[in-house]
Image 1 (tube, helix red, strand yellow):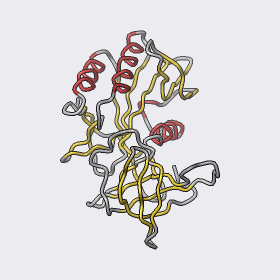
Image 2 (tube, one colour):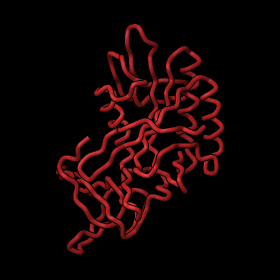
Image 3 (cartoon, helix red, strand yellow):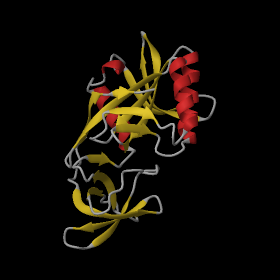
Image 4 (cartoon, helix red, strand yellow):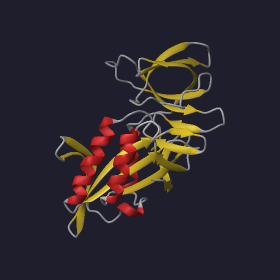
Length: 234
């Protein structure tokens, strides 16, 4: 996924009201940008460090700019836009870059499924294969040398694990795919210290036949794409 038009750069001043952040431009001006991340962004906020943002030409938008990337003090990059995760996985599947998800004839997004009124992120279908239900989660929380998900208690994430377990029980493929949008994360684990119920359900999901995958992103100010599989520690 290339950033088109090219991203602009500034430095982070503060994030507030969950969906807003103030950025200082290189000329000293300050702007407010939209923060497209519903999580706590724990350990992802570094005031004074570089940020990159996109600009929309839509005149109806209250905030024309969208925060895309955060630089870390160690020189790493974090993909702030959690909504990009689904698009990154779709792009990788279509390019046959995820071996575990190859060989399907069709891909659909946001299809209703399950008993809890959910929509699956991606649905893969083929005549000679079980239907494959894929939930995609963006992982950006780094503590020490370990990546974690979620970064806050996630009732929605818990619901999705229950839905995936139901699909597995019906004979379908059920996949949870962590998209690691942090260049310093090499492995993913459930954040039991943040959401113990999610960690418990994840272990149950593995036992129930849900497949757990994680892929790291290569990130630069010009593009972001899925690169290689990484370890999941359940």
